[in-house]
Length: 72
Figure 1 (tube, helix red, strand yellow):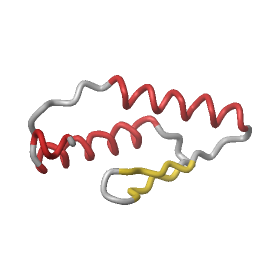
Figure 2 (cartoon, rainbow, N blue to C red; figure 1 turned 135 degrees about the vertical axis):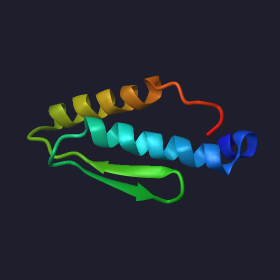
Figure 3 (cartoon, one colour; figure 1 turned 180 degrees about the vertical axis):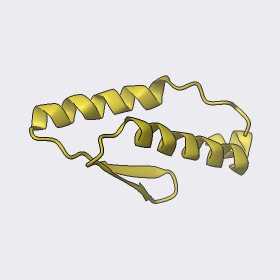
Figure 4 (cartoon, rainbow, N blue to C red; figure 1 turned 45 degrees about the horizontal axis):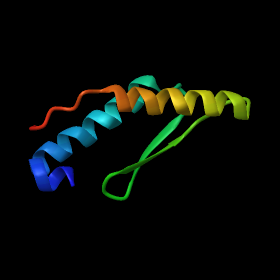
């Protein structure tokens, strides 16, 4: 929907921003992959399920809190 409204260049800008945000906040052992056109997979390297859930939620909140520009 974003691309339909703002164009592909703006959509690509947002996808790069999401990847950058995830990379900047991920731990050194984590692995980030682009999956499909607009989806990412982040494999979290944690010692416990509790740490993984806590950090996954922090990453989700981090991406959700970014104000994305409406044009690239």
